[in-house]
Amino acid sequence: MHPIFSRRAWLVTYLTAAGVGAALLALLLRAAGALSWPAAVELAGPLALLYAFVCLTPWYLCRMLPLGATHPAKVAVEHLGSAVLATGLWVVAAQLLGRIFDASAGAQAVTPYLSAVGLLLYSLSVALHYMLLAMRASREAAIQARDAELRALKAQVNPHFLFNSLNSIAALAVKDPPQARQMCILLSDFLRRTLGLGEKASISWEEEIQLVGAYLDIERIRFGARLQVEMQIDGACGQCQVPPLLLQPLVENAVKHGIATMVDGGTIRVNSRLEEGLLQVFVENGYDAEAPAPRRQGLGLRNVRNRLETSFGSAARLTIHTEDNVYRTEMILPCQTGR
Amino acid sequence: MPNGALKPSEKLRVAIVDDEPLARQLLREYLDADGRVEVAAECANGFEAVKAITEHQPDLVFLDIQMPKLDGFEVLELIDPGVAVIFVTAYDQYAMRAFEARAVDYLLKPFGEERLWKALDRARERLAEGQPAGAFPASRAELAAAARPPDQRLERVVVRDGAKVHIVPVAKLDYVEAQDDYVCLHSEKKRYLKQQTISALESQLDPRHFVRIHRSYLVRLETIARIEPYSKDSRVVVLTDGTQLPVSRAGHARLKELLGEAG
Image (cartoon, rainbow over all chains, first blue to last red; front, side, top):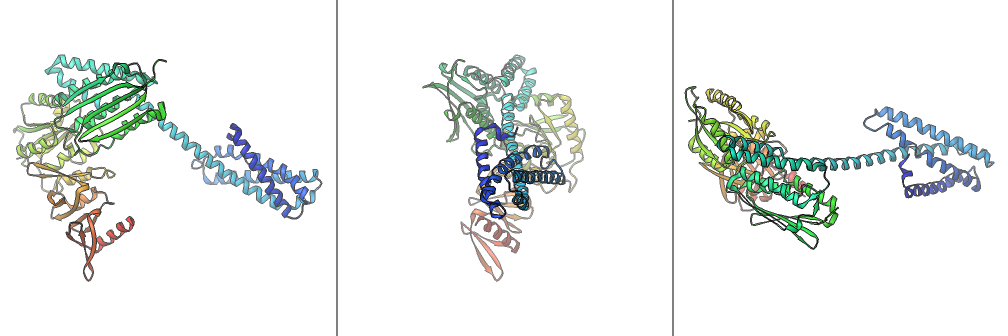
């Protein structure tokens, strides 16, 4: 089915346009001189309606002959052929109508005009259909890209985090076997929690906090004294249902672009509380202002922002403040409990 | 000295540069098992690395890439080109750039001892060849420039002054003057000398902001106050601080084009 039939408003608009076309056609037929006013109107009405539907047929042909994927000559020949066919049909219909309304001579006389208008309208319709198809394709591509990005992020474990952690385990294996074992357990815990997240639309805030805790425990072993963590989590937030991996990317950024840039490291503060039904969260960390601006920092953050918007619209927000070498990410979102 | 050819019997003097204590410890543990290697220095950030490499002159450096202060490539730019470098990182995407900058090897964390011995063998081979004249371009900065992806503009220029490192943000770089194999960077009334050709530096800077007004001068557009005629058919550029720099004919054409674009 042509998409015009999928919405009543579109069809009504199109038929209205066809009505206007009928009026214009009547004017043209009358102006040609061979038809009286009544005959011109009698012919133009049915002809316009007929052609309105004929002009929808390029939809199928345009989809069969996508531009770029088809040889231009083939595109031209096929559309030209169908344009001639459509116009021919129209002209024949005009002759039949002429007979019915007793104006055969007049109908015959306007054939050149009808042919010209028919070809033009059909070509216009082909062009518009290609435009419609291009618009559809780009919209679909945008939706697909966004879905893919979301899926990728949800299932994401930063491979560098994994390799660096494994390197730490390799280092600890000989010098400090109990610690190596501890790190294996922490890493498994973190991986198990993350791997299950791909399919989940939401998790409790408590689960997210546990995930972040496991992540930071691992990074603390890796960075040693350079990484200090202060977590203040209001117990009332625990049951809020949120999309997974909202906090973890923020904390990962804090490690990667904050702590890791400083010679002596620093503290990451994570705070979350519940206020008037809103989950209010901030992550704070120091950073080296002289360090070159990270090139890919935007990705994790943008993704969190996108997902907040998808889930909560304007009810959620993510803001960033930098002051005195402190980087602070604030996130506010509605707390939805129970399901 | 690192520049002389290494004899097979000699101990290899190495420096370990990594910001993670555990990563350094692991490498040290591997290296200690090899009797022909001596760890001369361990460094936890880019500044320390440049200082230690300048002072201790090791034959070989194990270099992490993501570190505080200077990244591995910036360290590479600043050290003696005769020092062999093996990158050690969890990131695989820099390998191409590393080899273009003449790194001996590229170790991906975590790696085993055997992989490390292979890298050490390569380093010994490279060092045994010594440094034939002309084997290296003018400097490591040149190599680093060549290895930088063309779409990535330089945000800061690193300069070594003895064992000390200066970081000059590109946004504060007023103009650059060519001096033989060196460039003199003028920034906020200070001057920094770096071993690099002006053309190599120019290729790393954003051409919308920096214009080569003369064979020997590269100027940041925003610091130009006005252009004045100098003699019959030559001109000078006057900077906001009053400094006058000569403009060549080609330089003037470039300048006109850029300023024209800016309106």
